[in-house]
Each structure stands twice: as C-alpha cells, then as structure tokens.
Amino acid sequence: MLQARKLINALVAGRRDARLRGTRKSCALEFSDDERVVVEVNDGEFGIAPESASEDCQLSCSLDDFLRILRGEQNLITAIMQGRVGVRGDMAVAQMFQSAFCPGDEQTLEATR
Image (tube, rainbow, N blue to C red; front, side, top):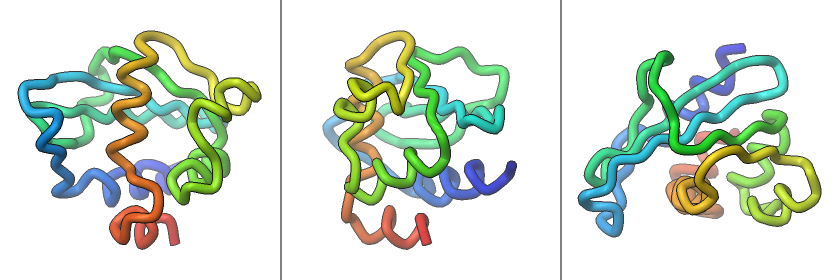
C-alpha cells in the first residue's frame, strides 16, 4: 500500500523543527497492512529513512487511526492507552514525532485529504 508512504512523504517534505537541532532519531510507522515507513529527524530536519534503517521506536496502527492522530481527532497517548496504537522502544521519541505532525497545521491537513 503506497498510500501511507505518499502521505508520510508529503508530511515530512521540507519540515523542520528548530527545537530538535542536534537530534538524530528515527521512528518506524507500521500499518496493519504490513507497510513500514521509517521517519527520521536529523539536526531538526525530517525525512524518510532507508527501509533497512533501525529505529529508536516503533508505532503500529491502522492507517485510519494514524490519520485521526494527524488531524487532531485522536491523541497519540490516549490511542496507546486504548490499545489502538502499539508502541515499542523509546516513548519520548514517539512523542517527539507526534509533534512533527502538528494537528491542525495546514501542511498536515492538506496531506491527509
């Protein structure tokens, strides 16, 4: 399913976060249809990591739940507590990547349409 990869590419294209300067972390997103995309932050700049890249954390969920989180309709931590999102690895990294896709910002909303 290329829909998730295209969506994530659109979300991270040109995205920077000055608060993450000096940070190098990665988070794998695994969707229920076995698609895996690794997003990385390198000195505040977001991008897609090579498929063989290792990750600091992994989030597993359906694409629908992922879209709900991006649109601000669902909080990541609440979704984890409800069992809608599985998390493995560093929870702080998972929270950092949630902030990369700010709910309600124009770039995120446009990409989820």
